[in-house]
Length: 295
Image (cartoon, rainbow, N blue to C red):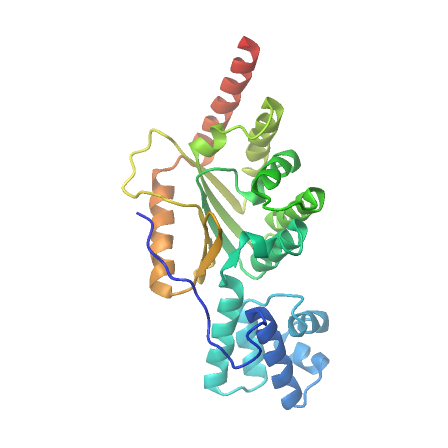
């Protein structure tokens, strides 16, 4: 059974409670740099980052990874207590609970861009999806159907589709690793005409050839020793993002993260991988074509 987690709130640094954790982190890092009498260019050299990246982090335009924050804090010679607070805030910035209404308040495209920032800050993403093909693997037409269904308010669907496609650029970054366990049910469900599902199944066979992408299918016939109750994504070993009906929750407590890692590994152990996974995808595609021909 899925572990029970808690919503990670992060520590309150005493700043404006209306600010997000990312805004608080950006402001705090900027204050510390100025207090240390360093320019952005000097800090960039000391941390081996670009000056542009430092600027984007300090203005909240880029979400830094925990490793980035650690490097910056050490370069600024921040006290150990302050370093810990910064790391806590960085984790909270990645993992804050957000309702779907809040996520969509600035547009569906902006919501997808926020996910892309989160994904860009990590090296390893492991996903279990029970109902749909994961967003990082979706075709544009499949994504259009899904985003239209999940939209709680009128929004720019085309902007959201384009943003979701931009997220997929990460799949071609060689030093990133991706693992996907997809329930067979998700591959059988139709969220549009036959061609939408057929195109999506074809897309999976192409992406499965990428050396840094592992796609596994959890067959309906698999004997499970866990009861997966919801879809989730694990970012490195620091964050688990869980999908709920009303929004999403981020979990950062190490024991809870470890529990989801264990669940993911258990599901992966029961899943078909490699050629076996592609055979299942191919069989589902053939069955879909046969059903269409019989109509």
